[in-house]
Length: 102
Image (tube, rainbow, N blue to C red; front, side, top):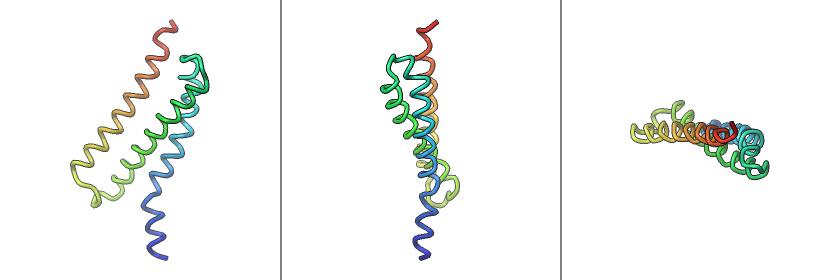
């Protein structure tokens, strides 16, 4: 039983961030990307993909921060780079979506 509880605790941040990322990504895609692309379905699909990527990377970052003994310095820098790249991707899609609508 102790091993199961430890396993559930290990994956906690990634699963929570995955779910939140997918939900926020679907809203982002439907209300920001969808109207800019002219298709709500395409926007929602792209938004969900971006949200899942952002959620998983943020969840891995939070999980690594909680247990620093399981991650080395190189992996930590890589996780920070992935989170920053995801933020740049989200911001660039917003600017791209609304740059031509002025």
